[in-house]
Amino acid sequence: MNLSDLKTSAQVHDEQRHDPEFRSEWDRTAFANDIALRILRYRQEHGLTQAGLAREVGMTQSVIARLESGDQPPSIATLVKLSKGTGMGFNIKVSGGAVEFIAA
Image (cartoon, rainbow, N blue to C red; front, side, top):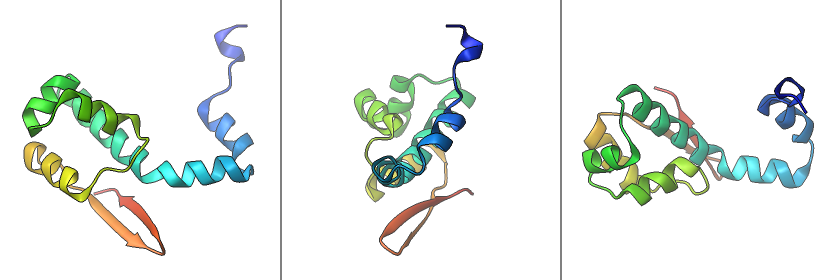
């Protein structure tokens, strides 16, 4: 199989989006994934390792790794710590039983 034969993540998502189990998991992790991408982008833009970011915000590398996995949503206290240590802002909306990250 050639690399060009592989489907993109968007193609896979489009094929799976009608599967109720997939949709449920996608919705459950959407907020955590949005935050994970924001943290990854910050690290890349600032040339930081997970350990470097952890030192910057007063956390451990393993906490940063868990945040970047996007499996579980961060607590408000964690977002406060990240914001204080990096200057990042996190605008979130809690409505209808869901949490949504709103890009700043």
